Image (cartoon, helix red, strand yellow):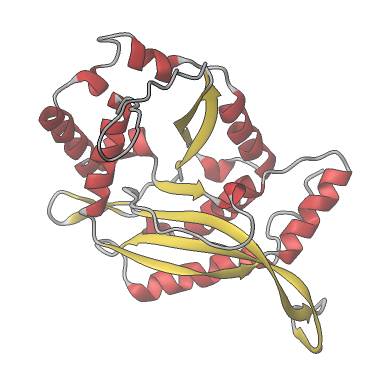
Length: 281
């Protein structure tokens, strides 16, 4: 139910106010934490003509696949082959590398008439199929759960939301510095998507707390060379192709430039070649 707007007058014009909720305080805390990390960014485009074509073919057969879920699947499987990318610094001279990949995503769902961003962590995503990740993301959006709104309305229901800011930030920092607690609350990698809300290309540079995360942007249709069956380019034929904008967000504290470049190159190749979409039936 939409709240009634109460208009007020001032010398600068008419205005109305909305609540700055306790959950927004927590968002600010995490943004503040993320801004203190030593991140590097890689921004570019990836040809996704082939995976989009295969996903459309599966849809005609009655098999629906989330494009974000597919990208997350490729991302997670590439992390498995480059495990150092999800290393987390621990204490003074150690780094923790988990065998499995838990990825955290933000899904938006409607709760009591409000659009509410909800954190969703998919455990051991490296063991899940594309369809399993798709179903988990879609069920996370459609699940009827009023808990986030209830926490705003019922005093004392959530200690994290209600505790003083200095103590809440102290706890969040303790969680962030402990790899095991961080995995429990935030997963080991992050996947966010703004592409579903955009028409055309474009991406963003998020302030992320994960050691490595990707932000899936929009898709541009541009002229490009046709790709032959053997993977080579046909320089004599230009056809429309789909290019995905994407941002890689990497913590430079635990990984250097060369391993990062190899990881991105591997991810780019897999995504453009429709890795994992061969036989889903």
